Length: 532
Image 1 (cartoon, one colour):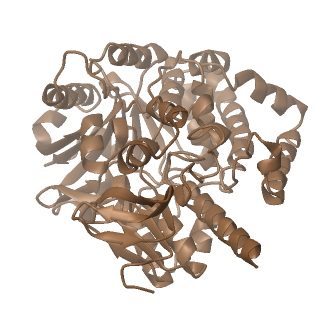
Image 2: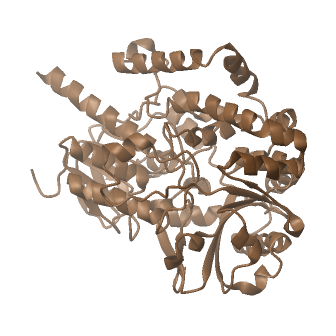
Image 3: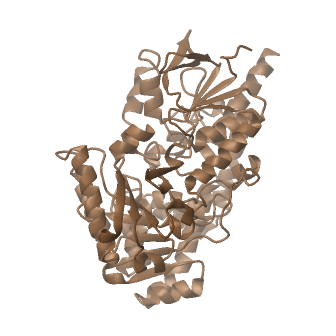
């Protein structure tokens, strides 16, 4: 085989690209993984944003990496370290009050009772039921969605669908009815059903909308909540939120080691200019440098729009399919803020490892109102972590880094320029932080703001959407990325999707990459059988 020829070329060395490459290489394929950036990892890398200060670039909490993938790829042996104890969540309020939710049920119940005695009794039964319902959906994460054409589904796909249906049936009549009732409603209504305290309602509202262009009163937000809660079941995720030693880049490092051990060739600073197409099928890639590399299979972990609208030259795909790709909802709405702090406020030091500022449903909804009109939220809702509390090596001795998801900051701005939006995100995020940690502004020595526009330009995420497409009922399962093309194989022969734009979507889970690798290997096996 020629030096510039491989069995498979995988585009993008984010976590899904690494997972796909490793599974294929372990199965005996000669795999080349090409990455545009200077290092693997994509949005999950750890990088320096100010001299001596490092932070997880976009994703900053580990909660969804699938246990089966960890085991299959021997990631623990390749250096993956997951803390024994998950970090708790502190729902913060102006003036210093907070609600700590931890693995200690009695302590959590006592904390909630300070706000509502009724909620203290209701919290665990209701959240545990939601996690149970989410677990039923989570059982399909490592499955291939069925084709709408029954004859197109092989026995394994039909069996997977049957097992999924059985799993739902085994929930029992009450849980099935509850799932049917809540699946399409908005989280504001669910929160009103469940709780009476604003602090719990606000927390639930942000959990259900973080990363999607929806507010708490938007339909489908309960589905997004269940999607996130699926990883709270240890069968389908980590069972909690974890801050990895070394940041999310440490997770990527273990994936890189696993890939290289399997024989994957990784090339960084090798952006793909276009997918090479001959006789109406993908046969390789042409790098931006002009270098041509051939393979009968090209798997892209880039998002569907970037892959199909930019890397595939016009005229090679059906116009109706392209129309569907253009209309995918890729509305990024979250900015990432990194702060270098001289000293850490007591409010941050004493809280749990994950802090949320979303004091009520109305607060989150008003923040979304700004985004609907193309403006940065006047008062954003926040998810805050301080990675240096568990890993001091991320900053100079005695200093700290703070990593924040600031919602909402829309990709589509009406009158605000991108530079103005970046300034507004920092100012308004700091103003909110001052409400819960007075004096924090004076401790900031350096900062970085990544708006959705920056996420697009720096990480090739179309629309700045970190899930590579919103995770809503009309863009998941057999509709992701489009009906009839939900099994990772694209309408251009030889081209596959293996990133979050395919089922099951975003989060650092690796599920899309694992599923795509399985389908590619199944296709190869079928071809060999046909040839024989």
